[in-house]
Length: 307
Image 1 (cartoon, one colour):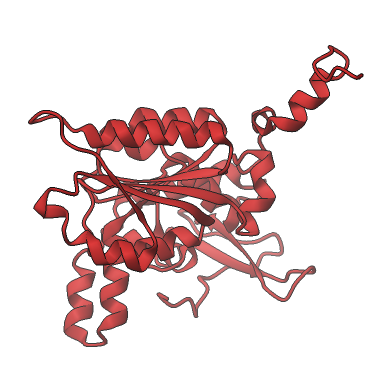
Image 2: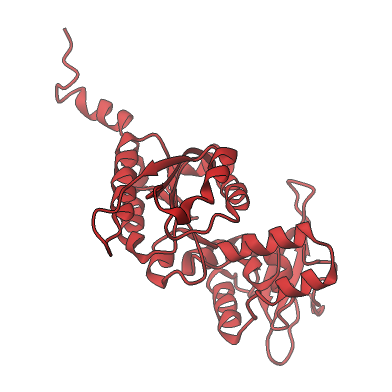
């Protein structure tokens, strides 16, 4: 009889049965190599863990739609003390979105037992190897170490919370999404009145010199000898530098119109030999004016709408 734990057989079996071995190798996007295909084919399995004590129930539907963009939420749980009256609003929301409530009594006053239960469940799910990533929904910095630990294990970690979320938790995630973005999208889609639109615009962050410097520096980091950088590479590096970077924070649905609104940056659309969609390249304008290789000046690209 063959012994599968014999030194000759064990290494092959161990590597085959343990995908964490593959997570040590990362591709140019910073995503673990064994997740690259599944991420873009939307087959990534996500565990969605919600801190019911720190997240409002009003925009859960929009939140779940956002999560679906990054993968398939196969595990959806929310944690809280359901004997507490302030959680009663969650009841109908949980039924509509198939979210499993996890009861966690508060053992003593002033101590949050919900966080501990959520962390323990996250580690159990991690070692079960049933998912490729996690979505931690909370505005609490207590989950910073959890996010860090999950990423060390090769998991993709998405965070969702309010703008009051402490920065340590934000930077511990691969990507962090503000609930206020989802709120603005929901309000703009439900009401077409100009009054409602102007109200939602007030929640939009302003484009500051700090943001412009971040974008221009990122363009320079990935640009070629002529200063041109592929917009996809720029977006990937921006996400690594600042996990909560999102063009929707500034009122733009996509990165292209955001870039197009910055006078210091010029855009060039190029034909794509492999497809019908054009490739978009960006470059930081020189102070004395910029020209291309053939001497023709480049101008900003028109036609990019805020949608």
